[in-house]
Structures are given as C-alpha cells and as structure tokens.
Amino acid sequence: MPRICAITGRRPVKGSIINRKGQSKKSGGIGTHVTSITPRKFRPNLQRVRVKLPNGGTKRIWVSVKALKAGLVQKA
Image 1 (cartoon, rainbow, N blue to C red):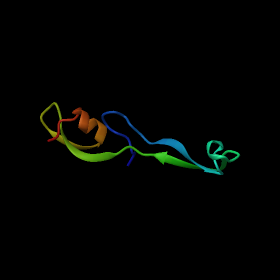
Image 2: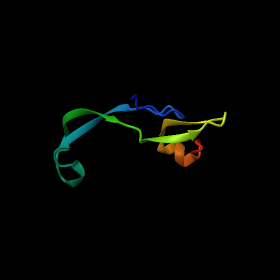
Image 3: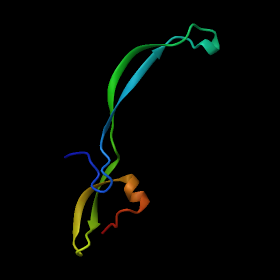
Image 4: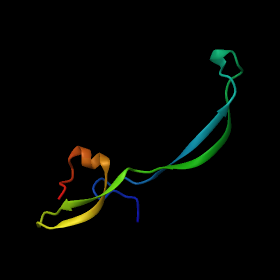
C-alpha cells in the first residue's frame, strides 16, 4: 500500500534525527556539537474511509486526517 493520500497527495517525506551533546554557550559551556545524524521519515496520518462518489456509489480510499478535518471528503 503506498502511503499517499488520494485527495491531497500527501506522502512520506525524509528528515533527520540530529543528536547534539555538550553544554550550550548560553549556560557557560563551549557550545553543543552534533554527535550523530540518523535518517527518519515523517509519515502522513492516513485513515481508510468510505467515500461517496459523484455517481452515487461508495469506495474505500486512504485519506489524510487533514483532508477529513478540512471537509474535503464526504463520508458515506
């Protein structure tokens, strides 16, 4: 299953977890330093909902919660 919203096209995007170590300069240290960078993904919050189609039928599709809250989808 592709993690893509059928309405808005929202999909997973790549990002990073950045770990820093050390005491900040503001609190008297020599500053923080990056110790590791780990790749990660930001996944959209998708829900499988039954949607009314324009021709009167219903279909189950994957829709992001942002689209549901915005009222872009008419639930069956």
